[in-house]
Image 1 (cartoon, rainbow, N blue to C red):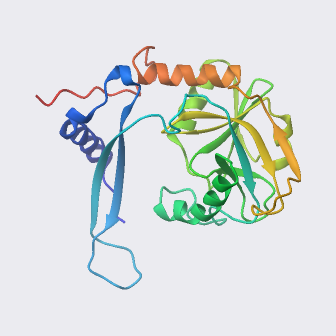
Image 2: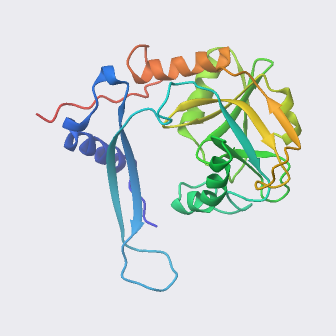
Length: 258
């Protein structure tokens, strides 16, 4: 599909913010204006082929905290051994609605069983970590920030930003294969993404199937956010809120349209 240029992308985001200026939550509320860029084909066709004409749009919505609760509240997770988020050599590394649709059934099952997060494994062998249903995985141990390196994992800008900050704090950053058995060696485990930045994981259950009532193995972590993860979180959020110096040039100021 034809893609917008970087300049067009940024200009559209700025225009969207200015058009929704009155809906920007107050600074004190802790809420934010969430932007969602979308690109979809608009050719009048029934055949299965790539669209030549596309529409690029940016939607805005005021949002509170993603979980509706206190930030950095630790949650439980379960592995998905009999449902896959994306196929090996498939489209998992791209921001496509289809990737989320494929995970919804398994995600709903996990939620009904009381889990807040669902951890997907590689579809070929189910032996190593890929990512959570809507966010990336990273773990902390021995002064290292470790996150999966897989072509079927969505490249998260939040994960990338956290890696930069981790290096700033003197942590070694590793992007590599993480086998399931390595979960027991982590000091801190988190999911990370745009909406939450970091969600600490207190427990990961492993079961033969998602529907099974038997837990074959349980990986336990702290019931609160780990000290290193909390430090990373505070640095990212501090930059976002203008409380700390943006030494990376990440922030863009948008002028009041009036």
